[in-house]
Length: 151
Image (cartoon, rainbow, N blue to C red; front, top):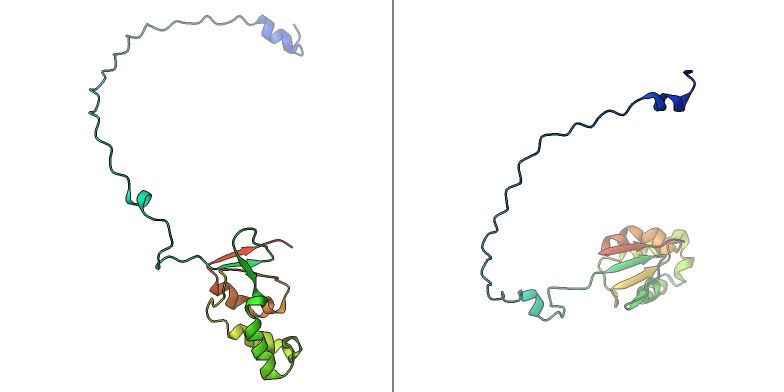
């Protein structure tokens, strides 16, 4: 036989005999314990029976949607919520907020954002808007949850 004959190597080897091991002793039977007595059903937990309305100490989280749209719940656009503050800044500077030099109008508006004083708890904003560019640090700090969409 040549050494290049791959299948010939297997044909020449005889199978090794299988050695049987000594029989093992039979496993011991499992003793079943006495069944536990059936207890009366436990009372339902308090959280199952209590009313699920929001209590004064609970509140809905403030959600900021950046480049995203809310499909459920009531939401509002950031500029709609800030319209009264924008009009006040425009009145003080006697020009539209976008015409105040060096984006100072948007910066002033951002400095007034000290709490979530909006009517809705879900607010949407476009990340390319000057308000977001200049005030994102304040907006992100006010929100409990921030959702960033893709553009």
